[in-house]
Image (cartoon, rainbow, N blue to C red; front, side, top):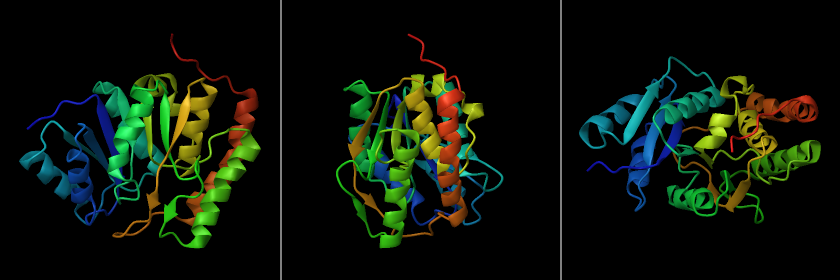
Length: 250
């Protein structure tokens, strides 16, 4: 049965055959209706074929896919998803991983922060109420936690979990930001989007969530991705001083 929705969840994928059907069914199993847009970067393991089977057999009009030719970066995947979602009229646009590190049951909480409480962006935050991370090696927990601390110190930006990849945007945020000018492709993309949202004058709320490391599939985190995030922060601080950010239409 087709369920109408004002919200779409963007899920970037690369080799997620172990998780993709499960995460799709988990989102569609929620009481609140969400649509899903998968951005697949040419997964050789057949991830896209699984999505297209579900689109045809069960979830026509609720599940969509953009297939890209190769690994083009997390940031460009989300930018493609943002543009598609705006063009198709969605009012609330979500970022979420395919591997269940983000709990689909938290989607309504992020939605409520924007729809009911009036915030322009809601961030599923691992660090707003302590350190809520399960099954990560301690070294990676510390790396992530202190990366967010570093961003706060360098930029003066008050969000605790700047690298979080679980978020909800109101459409007016993404309509205001020049998506073609977003510079970073890896995890620095997450920092840049939050920082830009803030500098444009939008209100951000951090919603506490528990992050659970993937049980199936392979992590896409690398040293290069992390170093881009660390080094890119200096560019954002420079932009914060000198760049003119667009303001939302009243």
